[in-house]
Image (cartoon, rainbow, N blue to C red; front, side):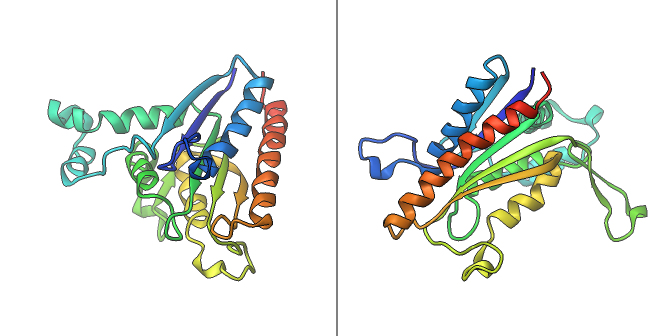
Length: 224
């Protein structure tokens, strides 16, 4: 049995009274999840909607607790780190991680960044050793597959695209994926939302189809 961790980051719900307000990234992710569950109904499924229920931002007290040896932490410090511990445990258990997120102001939503900030933590998901020279940070987790599902109002953020220099969402996700223990990444994108034309409808339809296909492919690859 495998474990799939699903993170949604849109502040919108998947279904709203006005369908025009439905989250695109959440609905594409549902195509993936439903396909996965059809193929692997007994797998463990962990879900967090950080867009609607965002993790707390880290604080000075949080940093102080992190850099206090575990055996010396006060009850208050342990409580401060309780959420971080739970989120890291979920990532550690996961074999497949699905992150579905819109692009907000050319980057990731603050809620998703808060989730990463709770997880990228010294001696938990990475260690630090100056003897490694200019690259002292080393991820501690490995062996996971990441599926990113992103939506954007514009288009052309891919390499060589007309907005490549404005692309701060997927590059950020790729960098931070190292600290989730990710060895392989699959990317699904939907674009043109602000244009609302046939290009947008085709992009969303293709993304949903790709999500369903990818789930079936990955489900077949995962060991029983």
